[in-house]
Length: 367
Image 1 (cartoon, rainbow, N blue to C red):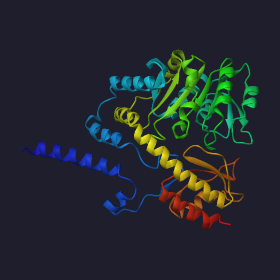
Image 2 (cartoon, rainbow, N blue to C red):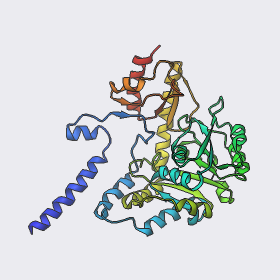
Image 3 (tube, one colour):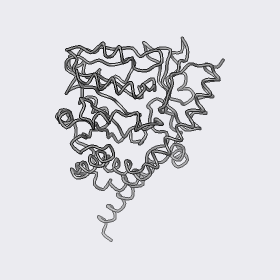
């Protein structure tokens, strides 16, 4: 056996072994390497159960082609797979490196004048548009933490170039009733494009009914964004997409900024077909979420209604340093930020992770 061949074989084995180690669940890695256990991360709304085993294997199998750009055929295949499931055509789908890029693409394509959006909500699109000179009209949520649809509609003017909504909303996790939101989108879309961010849709118990994708099928002036970062557990691999009328998709596509990732596209195809993993993640999340809400009830802490994988909790005044204090317990939560300084967003983790959190919260803010 030649030395060159031996080196190549060693390199391949090392790369695959390293990738497999990186994909191990938290705790196994510590047992294997002897390194300290990673912090309990409850700040990013990621899937606590990782990502599909089928997608993991696809990542490992694809490493050998990591020097290549994404295969256009694989990109087209994912677009076709998504379109078929949603009752659309491939020209109604645009892929991007996470829905974060979709949000920036929408800001570039539609957000140059005036954007009407709820507050608090996920700010990326509006922040990006403001850098382009756009004016953002912020409309507070109602007392139920839902979008105040009447106020949003009143905010739309002849200058409005985009209306943004997020359902379930981030950071509050609250759902706006689907029938009311659908009626709002239908009417408002006559005046300006309506963007609906559905990053957490798959966590809801009635995902298909909660989606506004039926308005896309009807050819309405509506854009729906989704992501593989949340329930599919692929936040680090960066794949997102938008669903819209073909002309709207083309406007978005004109502003796509980066090359799609070869390994990520293959992994997304495998993950998209593994609906058993998605359903298992939804059920596990629902069980742990109910238990955590019961804990909050027992602590007499107020929270917004949630059907997602995170909770918006009022931890009370004077707790703006809660995130820093939790770091001492190896838990990453993030500090509350003004103007909602009494509130903090908490990701639903595994039972063990939430057990560690509840123990720490009893010590830090217990009654």
